[in-house]
Length: 262
Image 1: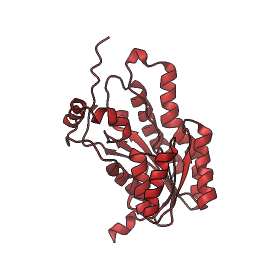
Image 2: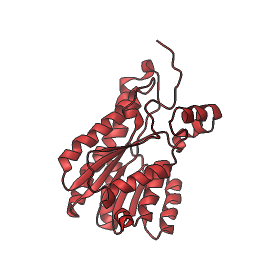
Image 3: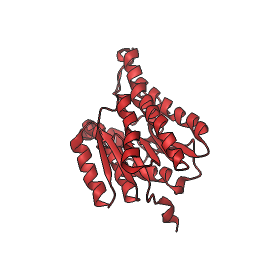
């Protein structure tokens, strides 16, 4: 049956930034499809909540509370998967972000921080994950990018540039790792996560985002998680080096900060 292609029974996945939002939804979706998960974020209480949800599916979650800007902490996740489960099949590089800033406030140091958080963390984990995946004959890496990696808007120099880099990094390493390991990305549009709470709790800003999205709504994290399952499972077995644009049809920023001309 076609639905069997979406099963991940016996597989093991790592999900970064898994305490809330897209990461939490992805971890739960992976468990619902049969995978055990290593989940990481800063806050243990958030991870405990996700672990309980994963446990309710009959699968197991191992939590790692850490600052994932620390590359050693990110690398440790691969060791945890090997130690706790003896294998690794899927990596979801979800941790990342950067607060939009006006151009003259975007220092070189801030730009470097954005690249570190959005690209270097993924690369650090992938370097240790790939040998473990090869022991199983292959695997799937999924990088959570953003629509801002391909559209332009004021204030997004650091965030958009780093997400664009993550997207092209996806294209590049998909060639390095083919044919055994597939590498794809998801360019997410505006999604109802904690990072957007300050926006979604303000009616005027929420309406702006909805109006500037062709589907006239903000995504639910589960909708991004559904794409994760497609790319992680046999359903997406003939995709590598691709970017799924799960963005409600967006072709421009859905949030205009109203930054004036210089």
